[in-house]
Structure formats: structure tokens, C-alpha cells
Length: 173
Image 1: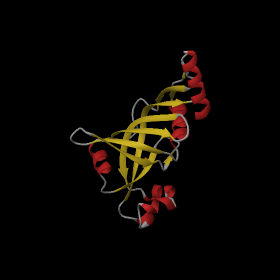
Image 2: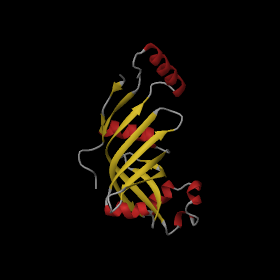
Image 3: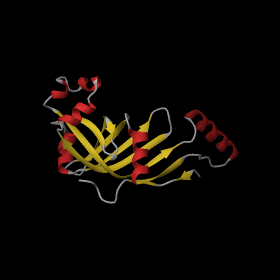
Image 4: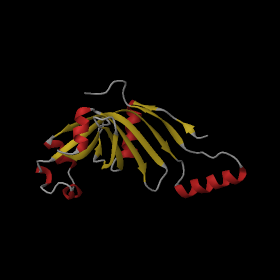
């Protein structure tokens, strides 16, 4: 079996920054009917407090759902590697112009044609509470070769590292 290493507080935040920064994830929210809704979102930043930032349209379903139930779940699967991250947290929808200016990129204009001043542009900030991560010690090709050898020899293969993430006992306001 692989190594199990739980991380908390600053170590957990560093792991979230390492795996989530600049990546696309699935953001899961809960509808008022109880259904779960998931959609891809591009992570704009993960700051020093562990807060994960996304751009969002003011009138989007996700913004509405977050305003009704702030509990969200993020799922990351890093392309080309065997690294995965899940994060539970509390989301807030805001229109902080200073933060928008800080996070703005040319790519965002594809969704917000009026730029940083677009009246429909909002931010979603997610304060992580906990999560889980999985990493392989080797690249995908080496990992697949070792799995194949393990299957031929009948021995379990796992040289990865995984563990729980605990950012805080109580969510930050």
C-alpha cells in the first residue's frame, strides 16, 4: 500500500496551493431540491489563507445555489499526472473590485466581454475546511509499467502518497 500522510493547517494549505492553483475542477453545489449540480471551473488563485478563487456570472445558477447553501465540494484531477484533490468548504459570492483587478487575465474576457468592469462579473471565494489528496511518486508511464508488473507478479502496487487535509476546525467567516 502507498504512504498515508495527513496534513493540517499550513501544510494542508500548501498542498491545496500546489495541486489546485491554475487548474480546472468540478465545483459541486446543492440545489434547493436537494440535487447536486457540478460544473467545470478554472481556479484563478489559491491565496495564503487557502481561499480558492473563481470568476462567476452574477446571474448564474451556481451563484444562486451558493447563496442558498454555502457548502460546496471541489474535485480536481490533474491532467497528465496521477494527482487528485477533493476539497470541502464554504463559498461566498462577492463583487470585490480590488480582488477582481488582482485576478484578472486576458482569458477571462472570453466570458466577461466588458472586462474587469463587467457588471455581471462576480467572484466566488471558497474557504476550505477539509479534503483529501492522492499523488503518485512517479509519472504516469512509470506508474502504468509498475501496475502491469504488479498484475503479472500478483503483487499489489501502490507507491503513491495520500491523506486527509484539515485546514481548520471551524470555517473562517
